[in-house]
Length: 494
Image 1 (cartoon, rainbow, N blue to C red):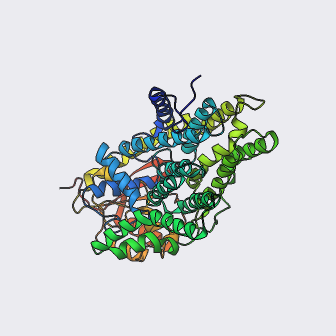
Image 2: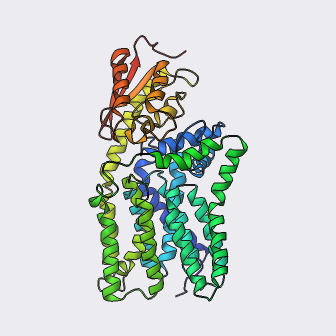
């Protein structure tokens, strides 16, 4: 049988096309329940709103505020420039990145296992990424493939073009930092691994220090270019505060980093543990240095997950590729159970998606959103009559065609107590400013996602009780979303 090209992992161009097509079909099937659902997840609704606004000339951090890097919003802007303003545009764009991550996982798996098991690892990547949060457009779906690309480039320190490949990896890492800054521990690990490889080739410490400085410069280059662009237009302070100050001003969660998600972590822990056990007891991995590299990468990925003071469940998606690679000795069909472990892992992970439940939930979500949009749309416009979502789906702004009443448009920024000192303005002052020109419609939810600023919440609830009437409500993802309409508001906007 013709062997695969070690550089690509494919027999031929036709083989590459068939692999990509198969993984694309798998990705579309896995992610199908959420395609086109404007409320498929939470954070990405803000990213989509800002990406769309960028196409109209708005600037992140200045016109619309968030602390995610500029590059993430640029990706969303690109998705909407290609596919239009609907959520399907970024969801299909993200699906492409999911397939890319699966292809790269397969490539790395081929360093330890055969093509069949490597393909299984790619499918497992698609399943676990959907299971751990990026089932629609969460940030991890974009930056995890960049980490996989870095791993491919620096894994082999004995490669004849190791330095050139490491330089390319550091630039990719710099681009990943512009998607999410918490990838920095992984970028640092890949840089140190590449330097260690050069040290093993009798490089002097002075040359290693110089090379390390070049690595760091390449990694910082994309962020520096974005910062200089903001400096050039006189908005350096807005860039600096959103990107580097507000992260540390945000209060830590009362639950801490480590207390909330033990059961949720179980599939990853089981895969990594069984893989390590198989490696130690059965000695399956033939390339022990590569296996050690994957194990060390998993540790660096853990640092990415736990770097922020508040850890959300979807952060664990950063662990998916290294966990799969660490599990390969257990999943390898050269073991006593042949293909049974891989097939069982795929079947179990698919069952954990609760596919039928997800289909039902997204259909209910779409129906609920349609009901809310039908109520709100006649009461708002894109000029002065602005909806305000105090708590609820950010996507309602785009779906209803409403203008935006504040630059802090993400509900969590104004209702979350952990953000009290992290916005550059007081939450209560901004809420009072919004309410001073009463929005024709206010949206609230009965169950908060986060610890609430009780002062702000009380102010809003007093206002809606006094000046508004509840016109409609819908049950969406276990929360009742209420539409409050200003008393004596016209039935339709002019």
